[in-house]
Image (cartoon, rainbow, N blue to C red; front, side, top):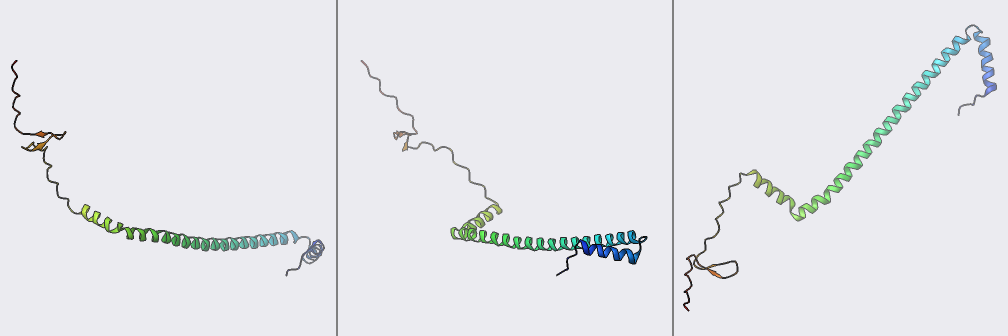
Length: 139
């Protein structure tokens, strides 16, 4: 598209510039051209950087959408399984029970007193009355 400028072409351009501008003003002209070219390069770099930033932002937005879609896809089977088991209902029951004032538990009864038909740990009959002493045998 653009014509290539080689060494012979540059020499011709330099000779014409020397004749037209003159040797006295040529260094000033070259400085101005150098600054102009540096300014153009800076503008091109800025344009390229802003274009790259836009590309990165669009890629990040696309990645965010993909991550959000993956999160939703991961939550759907978990919530479906929780609903199938009834975890949400159990959770709501626990929360309502915890939020309401819990009634104090009734006092637990002490150890059971042996009644007339109580059974001991080995299965023998135990009575609440003191046992009668065994008759003594006389020899």
